[in-house]
Image (cartoon, rainbow, N blue to C red; front, side, top):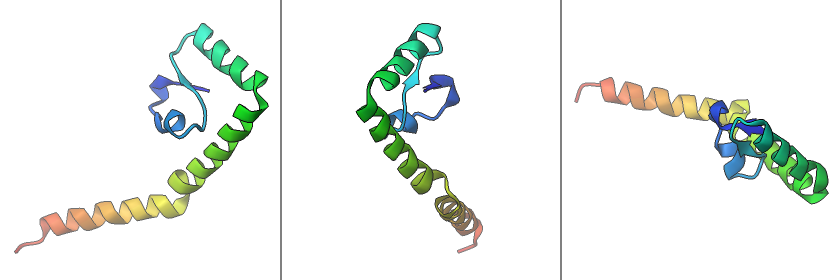
Length: 79
């Protein structure tokens, strides 16, 4: 459970957790949902694992950096 201010909307988009407003009530509601629903916890845990593996591990990060550097150098090359 994280607040919208964490700026990781992808967590909610892929079902890896809950992104809520920064109020005690919203956090309590989200935490209660996870505590009372074992299937939701399992699905969110699986999604969180895939998100970490596919988006935040070294391989995808390096691929994105290579793409950024390739585009930056291509834009600076003379025709």
